[in-house]
Amino acid sequence: MINPTQVTIVVSCMNEEGTILKICQQLRQSGYNVLVPIAKMSSDRTREICAKNSLPHFIDSGKGKGCAVIESIERITTPYLVFFDADGSHEINDIGPMLEALELGNADIVIGSRLLGGSMELYDGTLESFFRAFFTLCINQLVNLRFGSRVTDTQNGFRAGKAESLRSLKLGSQKFEIETEMVMNALKKKMAIAEIPSREYRRVDGKSGISMVWDGWRYMWVVLSNMF
Image 1 (tube, rainbow, N blue to C red):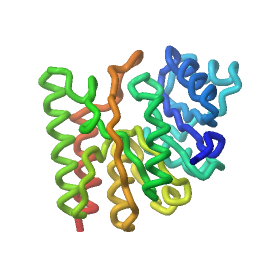
Image 2 (image 1 turned 180 degrees about the horizontal axis):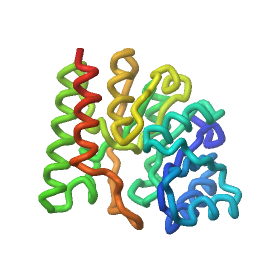
Image 3 (image 1 turned 30 degrees about the horizontal axis):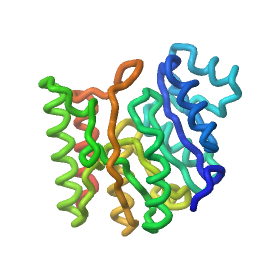
């Protein structure tokens, strides 16, 4: 059984002053280490709150979520890590099953699948969310066709991994497409990817930074550039 002290929960955030402290306190109460990469462009009191409450944190290079992920992987000293959103959309109780799958299933990466567990964010009945959900399914299908895999959610940021395995992936994406690149690079290296059902809740505070117009082409570029 993986001891919580062997795990660092990476809680990336940008303007999440309303939720960051509560989430990190809950994680710490469960025995986990936390690391908070704060977006350079963050303009609220997130950094002040982290400093005041002695939450390990750093300011990322400011190029996007991908930079926060890459820089966090480089910084942590524990053998395992979990990426967890600061907006309240992820289920803390799913971390345990993720770590269990990581250990007992001998996996390198374990993803919390919204397609298996459901999501209040991915599709909420609006036309925009319909296209977002459809786009997600298309990306999943392309990745699975390329590698003969059965990953149901290549894009969800809620995932656990072995630090050594993640460092070997040599990730380079700077924004939200980092998760898809992580999956494709892992599959290229014949790494084992597992999934557990995970319910994604509606974000408690803040606003999503993902734009289908501006970020959609980045996802497609990552997929197409790794197809051959």
